[in-house]
Length: 238
Image 1 (tube, one colour):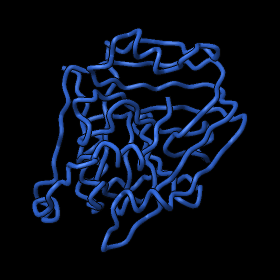
Image 2 (image 1 turned 30 degrees about the vertical axis):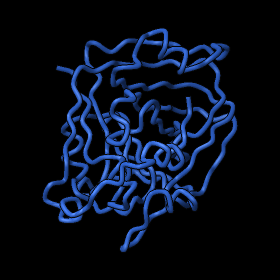
Image 3 (image 1 turned 30 degrees about the horizontal axis):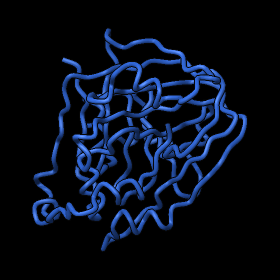
Image 4 (image 1 turned 45 degrees about the vertical axis):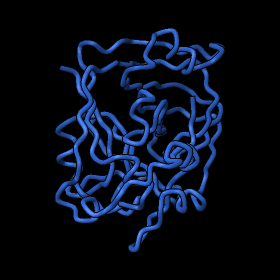
């Protein structure tokens, strides 16, 4: 059974639950491709080929080799024999949104990994927070943004169904990393040539919750305006 594995929820992050509650060693048992962050909401994580990279707020990219490093939130999966090779042409009007509509993935979880030459990439990176943690909306007001032109790299991440908004970012949640591993973060916008890679839809979503964390047990999710707050904090790129 093909499974998307997620530790934590976006709703938790919205409320400022940024403590690390699982190690990357444990996360990587469930997938070698995906996205996340580090404890303290310290940057944007890109998991590619089983390696963990962190784009930090300075703009630097770090290779995380100490897998005892923890995270409050990560989403990963393995591509398997059901992965589908795809090309997203540069002149394909509507981009990933149109592709998603044509492939009827709107009610599924899907993993995308697309490589190519990008004319322009815009990313943002969450700066590390210290306790007492702010809300994600407060962090979003101070997130540095970075741009690069004529850069080779990979966009990867997930499409998630609207039904799961709050646990996930409904729709697209994409990160980017350059081939030379010097530029990476949460993808806000891009212009690219032809992109090639793989996508896969999944019939199982495994949500793992940090039940040993007291802050998680204590908090009460504020559901009013949750979707709007996530959109404002996360941004989208499609």
